[in-house]
Amino acid sequence: MILVTNIVEAFEAFGRLIEGRFKRIASGDASFSNIAFESEDTMRYMMFYALTNKLGVKPEFVFLEYPHPNVPAKKNPKLDTFVEAHDGIPSMVFEMKFTVKNNDKGNNVPMTQMLGALISDLIRLHYAPDVDNRFFVWVFDRDMGTYLCNRRKPWKGMIIGKSFEFTNKELKKLPPTAMDKVREQIGENLSIERIKVATVYAKDFPVDGRPFGIRVYSVDGEPKDFPINNPCEFFKRNKRKPRDAQRGTSKKTCHGGKYSALAQWLEGKERKPFEIPLDELEREVGLISPGFTLPPASRKYLAWWGNHWGNVQAGCGWLSVDWKVRPIMENKEIKRVKFIPIEV
Image 1 (cartoon, one colour):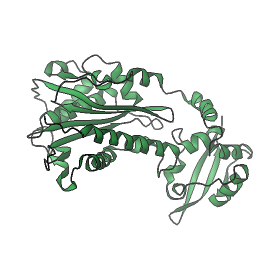
Image 2 (tube, helix red, strand yellow):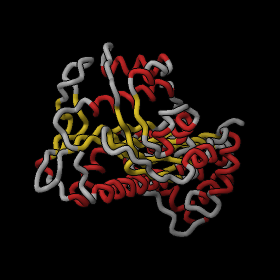
Image 3 (cartoon, helix red, strand yellow):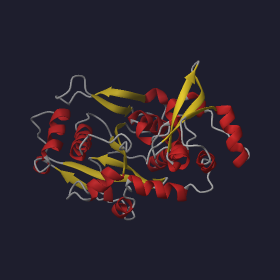
Image 4 (cartoon, helix red, strand yellow):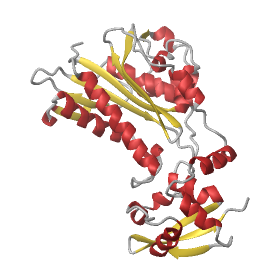
């Protein structure tokens, strides 16, 4: 392993970008309003920006979906990102995983299966040929954070920053669905003598009361612990509230916010379905909150009007007073919406 001295600065920049992006989505200013709609692609772009700006990596030396010759289970296996050595920067390979639950639609992927996918990425990195540094980048929410906090060693080390290692012996102790995922991703005949994993960067942060975590691991690098301040307490303390509790909390938390005026306006409406043009909606709510305007995304994207509590404009606006909304598209633009009372 040949680790450049300022690589952590790149990871810190990546962490700031992810946190800022999530908070922008939660605020309702982005083109969509559910963080769960993000993917590993977002992580690649953010990491690419951080590496080029903080580490001086040149774009022409970066390869996405780089061929991986040592994974027999898949046809044409790939590594997420590969950086060729150049200008004093050692070669690096990255695998990235985004495991954030969509609380509004539910998530039918078992936690054990997600664990198997994480371990598969670590194994894939271990077998990456002729590279100086192997990094696994993971963005997750409370569900996987809490799940791994409740796991035994060695996997709990992924959350708490303890370096760990595993062999076939530890793999055989995995839950069956986790091991099935590893076999699916890597192959049936696993022969792992020892894989060493150490946390080189960690960041935990709340977004609108919902906890998220970022971890960057070095695979087969120096076994070194990384100090993290009570991560398990952070994820367990911010456990998701049931729907009824969300409603009460939403009203209190959003008091005085931009979309509270929308909620106040709806409370004065007769509880029957009605349609209204967006321009008129802005004028009427503006009588309650002068200067009220909807962001440009509200006229472009149906997802902005999503009826779910992770949507700040919904949670602080119409859902908080038991209304739902249906956007109406005209000539590829949302010009009016229909509000429908929720029977409670």
